[in-house]
Length: 324
Image (cartoon, rainbow, N blue to C red; front, side, top):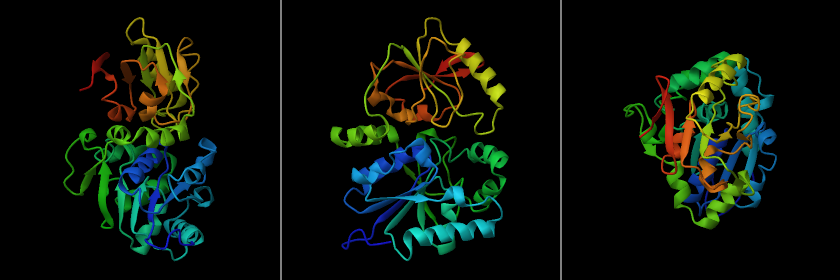
């Protein structure tokens, strides 16, 4: 890789999901704004975000690299590692980095760092997931068992690998206080508020270019339960049909569909405003107008970073209860 700047080594970031992409954009802007920075994303992300390379042209990162995940076979660890290292060599050669941050650590990019003995900081996969590794491992085991086994072997769900320097997570969302890893608190909701209006607009407009107008009085966040393999497609429909039916009367919904949820909700909610645009739900306060007061969710972790903007409700014993 050609040197981006001559005065300092670049910082390297990796992200996979919409939430992780938002995380690293915010972290780079707030923590490493004055340093050169490179972003690695999976090649398949262009299906969701065809304009992903705008990140570099807007100077949110100095370079964006596509890691060829679709070309890596899910076969054996030695073959997977060899393919990942070959991709690293093609992208970076002998380049060095001042710091490395990995969101989506259970993806094969982490094998390059482990094989090269490169220390890195790890973002939790989603808010609260650091102390709930089984929630990540079980669905992945169903869909990509080799990947799940490799990630578990190297402690990439929990950050317990010796090369992991810190785990960046939302501490208030954890099930307990982690003792085996060094944690660094990072709240996406607070990070968005900490930006200047110009900085925030630059990031938000990558995902949503114009405001979304609504007459809804409540927001509902879905989770991709069937895509994860947690439920079958039929079970997913039944689950959400029951959730929607139990909402308070006169609820006019804005349904924010998870970026990886491919379910068609039009038959389940013919009167709702359904949003399938693949932006992180954490951006709702900056794109939805007017902003409803209430937010309902069953399964989504997005609400953890929306607590300052909504009254949040989750189902408990058949009743929607406020989350404090």
